[in-house]
Length: 145
Image (cartoon, rainbow, N blue to C red):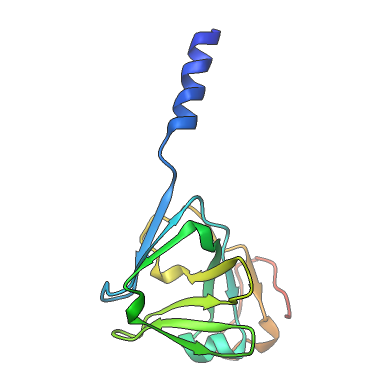
């Protein structure tokens, strides 16, 4: 490939529109966009995630600076511990966010994203607290905590 062609392809890559992933609650009252690729999600099997979601909670961590949210007045925040709050839509009840406010990131539930997400589950966490009604058989790493 000659240098002019290489420069052209380099320009196309650098000037391409950034990747944006969008999502919403079930009724569309809360919508969000994440700029950039999504980190591989984890599946949290802790008691709190199971109680809130009805099963385990698969989520991805995104930098706050890459997230825009519309309909924030439709989000109800529940402080599930001293360090974390959980956000859900006050209209439809969709479980959307797991937020440690002191960090520069926030977790978003994978089920709220529109497809394609271009990522796959990476790990199971808090498996020591998982429900007794299912087995984890996908071969992914499992952390007790």
